[in-house]
Length: 127
Image 1 (cartoon, helix red, strand yellow):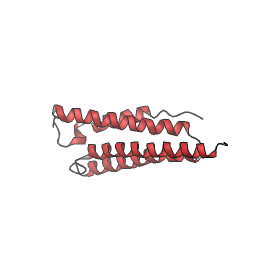
Image 2 (cartoon, one colour; image 1 turned 135 degrees about the vertical axis):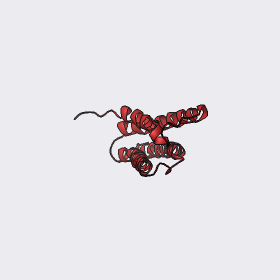
Image 3 (cartoon, rainbow, N blue to C red; image 1 turned 90 degrees about the vertical axis):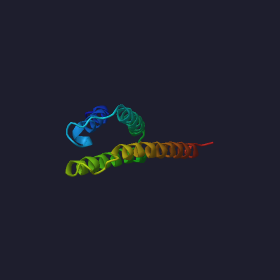
Image 4 (cartoon, helix red, strand yellow; image 1 turned 60 degrees about the vertical axis):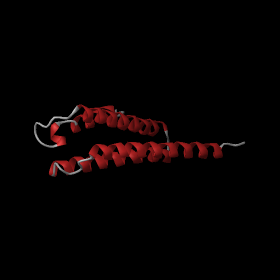
């Protein structure tokens, strides 16, 4: 079975969103502050997704599904944003905050999942 590397997907998605078509009018330029904020959003996104992917690779059985859930949500949500912006460029005007929100909620979710996994493993061990 061939191992799939998700790193190019995590890098390719932000690059496609950074095109001027994703932001609106043709030839529209981004101010420096907007670019800095996008970099912060994408760094948070990739670090949050990397934590989830690392957990998915290491965990076994049902815990693997627990780790895959946020990535599935990100893929569906990103598809929804890209599809809506393709139809109407004014849709999801604050898409970067939506993605940033996913990253922060994912970090909370993963901390909870890591804590629960550890507690269940500790309870299963004989004294």
